[in-house]
Length: 89
Image 1 (cartoon, rainbow, N blue to C red):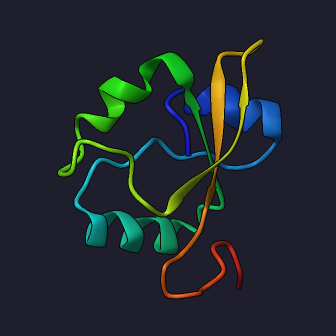
Image 2 (cartoon, one colour):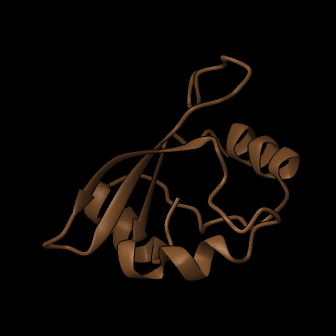
């Protein structure tokens, strides 16, 4: 899950989807359906992105994994609150 899907799909050689803006239930349903395991978002854009969500913060299923200051991105792991493993088949 990213804002620049074409770049990340090419870079990771994996399918990429655009960041979904929705309430918590729909966000979780969408990441489950699309089997999203990671989100990579521009660190500088996080306050603006968070402002689009109902609680004005990033969804709780996005757990910060690391920030890469050189590339200006923050990497999130997707953790399903129901204990399901995202991306599992």
